[in-house]
Image (cartoon, rainbow, N blue to C red; front, side, top):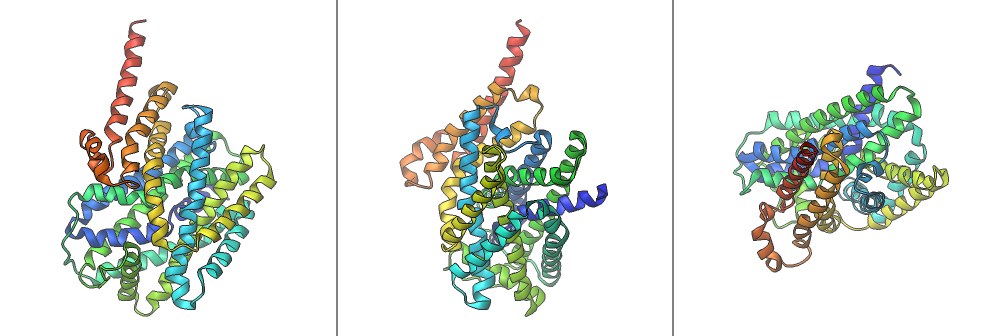
Length: 431
C-alpha cells in the first residue's frame, strides 16, 4: 500500500472507530437546546470530544505501545488497575450502548424484532470482524467509513440549506454544557482504547521505522480530528437551526428526544428516504465502534497473557456475550449508569493523555504521580454528585473552584503540575 493511500485508510478507520452511537445522537439535541449559543456549545464540545481524543492519538504515536504505557509512570500496579477498569467500562457501557441504539432507532422500528435478537445478531457480526483482526483497518477504512461520511454530509448539507435559524438557547453556561456533553461520547476513553487498535493494525502490515509510523499515526489523528470537527459542528448547527421546525416532545427522555430529533432532521432533509439513510448510518457508526472497543480489549488481555491468541479469542467472546446481555437495556438506562462512572474515570484519562503527550522533562514520574493523585481526589465530589443527593456535598462543592460545573479537578491538577515542575527547577538550581 502506498503511503498516501495508507494515510487515508488509517484516518478513515480511526474516524470510524471513534464515531459511534453517542457521537451521532448527542450533537443534534445539544444544538437544539443551545439555539443561538450553538457556537459556544460547539467550542466546549470540541474540547472533550475532539481535542482531547486527538491529543490521545498523538500520545499513542509517541509511545507506540498499549494503554498500559499511559499509566506506567505512575506505577505498574496503577497502570494495570487503570487498564482493567477502562476495558471493563468500555465493554460494559459504550459497546452495549451501540447495540441498544442500533436496536431502538434502526432495527426495531423497521423489523419489530426483540432486543435479544438484535443484540445476538449484532455481536455475532462484531465477533466475526474482531476475530479477523488483521483485516479490520482495511475493511473499516476502505468501505464502511466512506459510507458513513457521505451519508452524514448529505444530512448536514441538505439540512442546513433547507432550514432557517429560529431557536433560543436554554443553557446558562454554554461552553461548560458542551464540555460535559462531550464526556458522554466516551471519546477520550476511546482514544486510549482504539489508539492501541490502530497501532497493532498498522504493525500487522507495516514494517517501517518508529518515526515513520509516528508520522502516520499523528497525520491520521489530525485528519480524523478534522473529520470529527466538521461532522460534530454540522450536527450541532443543524440541531440549532431546526429548533422550532421539529417537535421532539419534551416529556420524553433525553435519549428518545435525541433519536426523534435526528429522525426528524433526516426526514426533513432527505424525505422518505431519510429513514433508510438514518437506519444504515446508525447501524454502521455503532458497529465500527463496537468492533474497535472489543478488538482493543482483546488485544490488551492477549498481551497480558504473554501474547496468547487463545486469550484474545476468549476475551472477544466474553465481551460479545456481555454485550448481548447488557444490550437488553434501553439506551437511556445505559447512559444513566454511565454518568457517575464517567465522572470518576474521565478526569484521570484526560490527565494521562495530556501528560503523555508532553516532553519527558515536564512529565517526570513525580509529576505523573502528583497530578494523577490530585486529579483523583478532586474528582471525587463530581462522582459523588451523581450517586448521592447534591446537597449532602454542597459545602465541599462551594469551596472548590469550578466544582459547581463538575470540573473541580481542573485547577488543582494544573496548580500541582506547575508546582512540581517549579520545585524540580528550584532543586536543580540549588545543586
